[in-house]
Length: 345
Image (cartoon, rainbow, N blue to C red):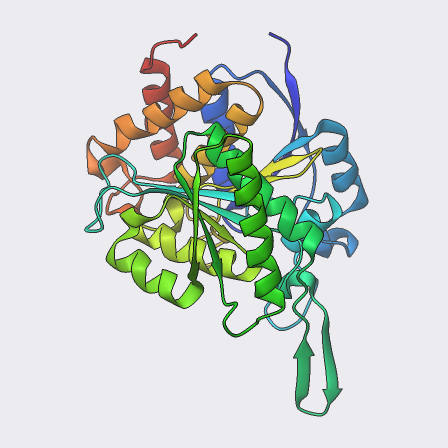
């Protein structure tokens, strides 16, 4: 099988540690990849004054897929988020974040299996901020019919392809009647089109504040959550907490021509270089990439390999999961678990 070219973005902080762990696991799963390493994030900004160099964008466009580590964005000043720019420049309109209980690491919330589908290119993340008078700042929320329709149709297509039963649109249309009202209307129209085409995915909606309360009381009532950009960012972190933390939550960004896979956690500079970062979220993001590349067999082997470790001796896990292991030793154990899985057709 010929190797697939994939752009490798190590990122900042713990990024190089967890992305390297994911790369090693992918190799153990017999996924033939020709890695194209490119700069991104704070390190790139310090080196060339650009957190998202043109060569990086060009490489992803040429390959069509990238595995990305977390990147650091300064708070309150400094360079614009490389994450936001990457999604906008590559039109990565859909951010998919599966939230699924990891076997052996069950929490008091019980078995959880839901998916967050987040619009990825507009909303308040458009970055349209202005100081209109001293001490008065406006930040413009941009919601368009084009983007809302596209992400809504993506959510129903995703639910159908993965055998999901329901899509729930999350909004605050009782307050932002025009912006969130437009988003909700587009979701309803996508639901109507899905039903008219013979689809069996049901549709409902919920206010974002009510959703947050319901998630922590009974997350099992939800299947696929469809959200605007800001709500999706916040709710996906909340949902990750239900399964044990950000270190277990993978993610993928999809456009018409490119896809970028990344864990949803940040660069954690406070533990960078200590060798204790949890690589599981990044490894599971790599598994998502395998599925995107037409290797569902590798996707399944990696997820089973992770589960074989998390169900076992907890001492091998990293400190955030209550263990005494390191990034490398946990990756080594997962590699053994992946290699022990039978080859799948």
